Amino acid sequence: MNAKQPLNQQGRAPYSGTIKNFSKERYISSDWYGREWRTVWSKSWIAAVHVSDLQTPGDYTVFDLGSESVLLSCDAKGQVQAFYNVCQHRGVRLVNDHHGNTDTFRCPYHSWRYGNDGQLTYAPHQDGFQQGLPLQKICLPKVRCEQALGFYWINLDAEASPLEDFLKDMLPLMAHYEFENMTLVQDQTVSINCNWKAVLDNFSELYHVHYLHPQHRRFVDCTESLSECYEGGHTRVWVPGAKTDSLFSTPDKPTDLLSMQLQSLGLDPEAFAGRVDEVQAAIRVAKRALEAQEPYYRNFSDEELTDVIQTNVFPNAIMTYQPEMLWLMRLRPHAADPNQCYLDKLSFERFPNSEEQRFLEGTDDLQEKRSERATQHGRPEWESFDYSDVIAGNASMTDTIDQDLSLLAHAQRGMHSEGFQQCWLNEMESRVSHFHEQLESLVKAGD
Ligand code: FES
Ligand SMILES: [Fe+2]
Image 1 (cartoon, rainbow, N blue to C red):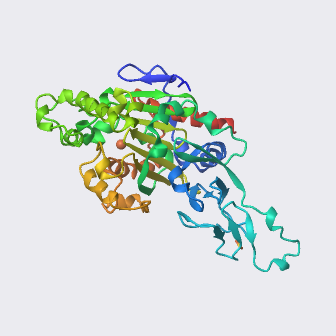
Image 2 (cartoon, rainbow, N blue to C red):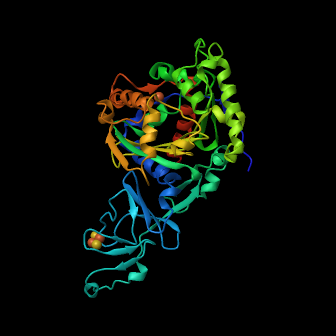
Image 3 (cartoon, rainbow, N blue to C red):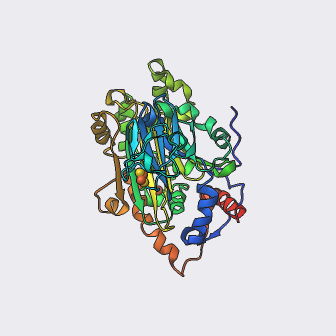
């Protein structure tokens, strides 16, 4: 499979594409929200569930998208299918929990029962249906469901082209990270009082990083990042890691986060005093040496061994990854209100056991959090909370995302102000612009 070249790139060079400003309507208008649902959400492939959640016959997961709810189920033969999560008797939502394992879905209302292949198997007082009740003909309506990059993806459009076509430029960028072999270690959802695109925009540019996330300069070089735009509204940014930000002077000693990375690979941070610009190369050499016991490392270029890559799959998946980890951050629209949305963050690790961890990245107290998780068996619990819980300090999605959420809490009020009419986009927001161009073309084509 050959990766198509990106349409546009922009590192230190000027952006070769066109950046267009746009009006605020798409963030606040109910009319736009309806058009967006019909043309984008109802027709796009959406990463719904990691393969590990649907491995054993009987496993199921409920995935809500706007006003729809989709039930993904692994049947007795191990086949995974997706269905509209709605009882065919009188339309009650069939399954209300997040995930589990069962051979029968029983409607809580009048106890109609369905197998995990979606087939209706039993209805009480069957003789009383004067027009008949052909059990074998009644099945939960199917939703398209296909597998790629370690996830089951769903599409509400029965006529959609295959997932592989949709992801054709994205698969070669990510397949070798083997997300299917990563383990889910945390599963969080936060509800936010702003439009889903304001959150996506936030995670599509590094313009704000120096100001909102000063801690990043201690372990990644956002100044040297490379942004890329692909056909179909997909984008990618490549951020050099295991170094400090080149906009600022190099520190005399490795920062706390670089020290943590060095130590995890058996290197002494003290030895890099006065040589901090050699840390990245040393980490690459140390990881390359791991190939002998862990052939997985052969999948990667030297740059991929240290750098952080984020690929946004249109419309709503933000995949941030290194060889040892993946975050799937995923936006979901509210059922009816353009002023609200949900952000899911699913965290995965390639080496979930603490003894196996080759490398640690992230926030100051990550090591502690990871060892807590390493003691858990089975799937982590789904945690669901409101952005106000994060601002109050009662829930966290890492320091960085908490900082983003505290800012986004004010975004929607600003958008509604008469004093704000349109966004002005900088070249550093090229990925924001590219996403919106695709969104706008789909929404307008549906008019
Ligand atoms: S609505 Fe489900 S059994 Fe009646
Ligand atoms: Fe941010």
